Amino acid sequence: MSRELINLSPDLKRLEDEGYNLDVRGAFALVHGVPYVNEDREIKYGTLISDLTLAGDRTTTPSSHVIFFAGEYPCNKHGQRLSFLEHTSHTEVVFENVIRNHSFSNKPPQGYKDYYEKFTQYINHLFTPVSALDKSVKVRNYENPIPSNHVSVFQYMDTNSARSHITPIAEKLANQRIAIVGLGGTGSYVLDFVSKTPVSEIHLFDGDAYLQHNAFRSPSAPSLNTLGSQYKKVDYFHMVYSNMHKGIIPHDYMLTEDNAEELLVADFVFIAIDHGESKKRLVDVLIRAGKPFVDCGIGVQIVNDSLIGHVRTTTCTYDKSDHVYERIPFNQGGNDAYSTNIQIAELNSLNASFAVIKWKKLLGFYQDLTKEMDATYELNTGGLAKRDFLD
Image (cartoon, one colour):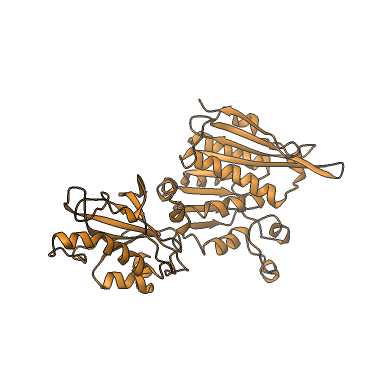
């Protein structure tokens, strides 16, 4: 992807063609080997780093004039700091093996029209004192380019994590194999959220067709013609989300006691089905295998012409599973709120959000101070009850 991005972006291609040591990693461009002067008037070499603003598969006008720098703070030929560049100074991991020490801010009145202009202006600021001390030093030193061998799981680059400076945190989710059981309202929102993370595989399990009622409680907006095609849910959502993520794998059948062990290929499982007997078989298999999972549940009822109910998220890990059979309802029918099957998009989305947030907490993406393994949000009070805490 980085090679294609450079070839399709005239500004990046120009940097490379003119001999700058350009490297593209994820949604960042780096120019290595930039000469500068430190406080001891020594000539050193650092790396300039900019996040990229992209329009599909090519660069567009930079959204920020700020640039990052890996190295000591640059100085003039007398060893005095270049204060006109000063922005912030602190160590931060941009992504694996790349640490920035400073950020610079030097904005021309009209801003930067492209990344060639942005990089070369900052390079010139750093290089001018170097040239004053030693005219033999070259700023264009494309002799040993640093190749990028990273293969992305996305069809296009994740510029959101780059812009938010959370790429190293997002990488905690990388290489995970995820299974989603059930692509109704909640499961489809789980897919929507997980597809925007760098997990390696997302296995979809559901044997039902994508019908008109599904369109009103799941993400995306299918056309009438699409609904008329009566795709299997897994095929429809594979078609939609493969536009973004390469690792979506559809399984167009229900999981039973005969094939439940197929879930064990995953590192983490989201269960988003209502059928109690089927759910219990899956839970039994996952607990025996020590496989972590989140079970999602919504209970909504009509009371006095309004809806009341709750959204439940029950988490199970290898270290904590003794609460699961008490918290997850496996019965069907009767007065059980889950049997009413009232589902509304925002509640499905909320249920999925709680589940995905908990998964991310387990991996250290979000901080988790309470480590509850069961949480229930009450719709009419707004209360959130947390139970079964991990020691």
